Length: 212
Image (cartoon, rainbow, N blue to C red; front, side):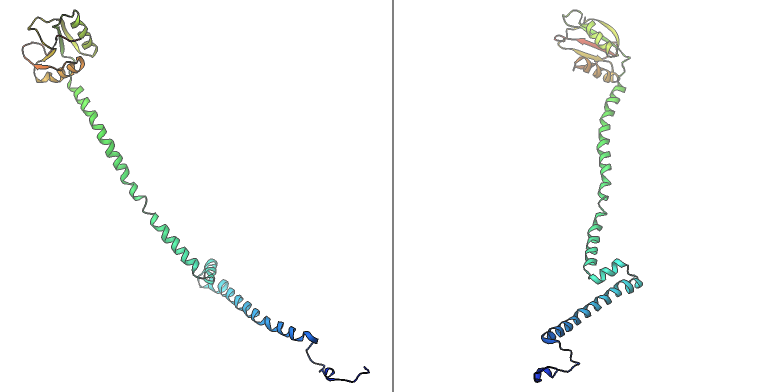
């Protein structure tokens, strides 16, 4: 026992929870834990609903997480799906391209038919007579060699004894010899072609002055 007299601070119940000067601070800390515990319980309940109940209703784990997180994930997925859908019709415009290529190639083959038809119309088995109406010696023989080298049949080569000619001429007998006369004119560089029945030969080449 103390020697001092008891005062008002000594009259404290033995069952009191106060602990010196820090009793008020300890009580306030215990009261501040209640909201934290309540929030934890709510979060736990949401987690149980998302991962235990929603899968039973047909939602996958990823969908359950999307439900708990919000509708933002579903909105982004729908926008990406709508953006990717118009890409599918893109191969359609490529189909007309081969048709255009074929149409461009087809006309190129048509000009080749014209030379073949002309070549078929030319009959080089028809004898060609060459006359020299110039003063150049041996010109008929030289031109006759050119005609033979091109595949023609050379009939006669000599000097011209008829009316003096002012230019080189190819005489052909009848319309059936016209293609042959044109082919000879292209070969020898002679532009004047005359249909004449005066000669008893199908093709007659008369080399006039100035022919080289």
